[in-house]
Length: 357
Image 1 (tube, one colour):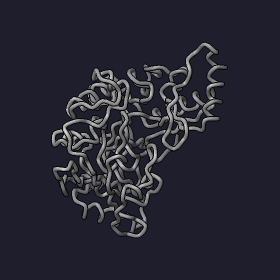
Image 2 (image 1 turned 135 degrees about the horizontal axis):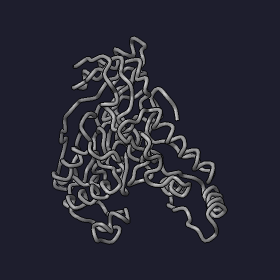
Image 3 (image 1 turned 90 degrees about the vertical axis):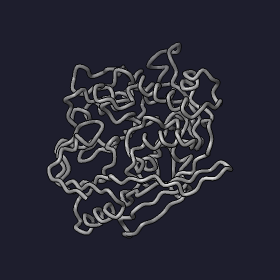
Image 4 (image 1 turned 180 degrees about the vertical axis):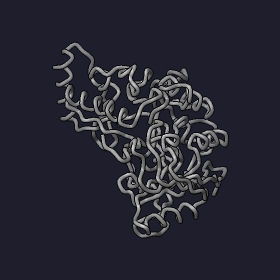
């Protein structure tokens, strides 16, 4: 276990903003992780658990407490049989895209559409990471955590995780520190049915068809690169938290109100907001569409230090010298602008530490 002081947290986040940590502890084993968290809690000091830093916007003042960085490793195949199932336990600190790459190479189907997503494996159940028609909730069998309240290791089955769109019981409470995640993969050479239209078009197939796992992964990476969603130190469009706002989910009546508001703003012959049926009976629409039609196009904010991506309106980016305050100010302008024009309040996906949106 390493212990460092006054370490810049900007260097540990994909947005590359944030002041220093008063104390940074690097935990490389589960025992070290549990011991570090318990020590801080016993001392009743502020704690920030840090994985890949892809979903954090840390204040410029930094964090006046202990940051525990999860650097655990290990991928263990608990069982695999010829009937098509592989149960695999993965340490929270494993880099998520490395896990996806290995899953594709091993013929474990179920997460290939989640290629290129930055961050660590332990973060995936927290916000039920998803993209291109897949969510980790579809393949997670069990999540093992340290419960800070009861000070014990606990395991939750998938049904106990309360997974919903970009949410889970672990996001709803700061009590849980993810130790490892067990996935139930299908052993297959082919992907799950391709559910995303642009992805299917890029593969030259019909929606719902299946393709070799490697083809699916490469097609997803191509789509993400087009949107600046694959980390590249040389590309400021990737200095972000990915999608900054979640897609709004509303009742049918509320969506009809939105349609009326859009017609009033853009005209009866103008564009209409995208509509997707949500699994829980609501209606989902596109945050990126609302942002664009509210007047915040690609590159909005340039040449300032923080701007929307030149490739994708849903990403707030650091153009190289942005502060956390710059990022928050731009995100606030976009959120408030969408609300003023269309009456929809966008919800930020990344977690703000030490400040608020």
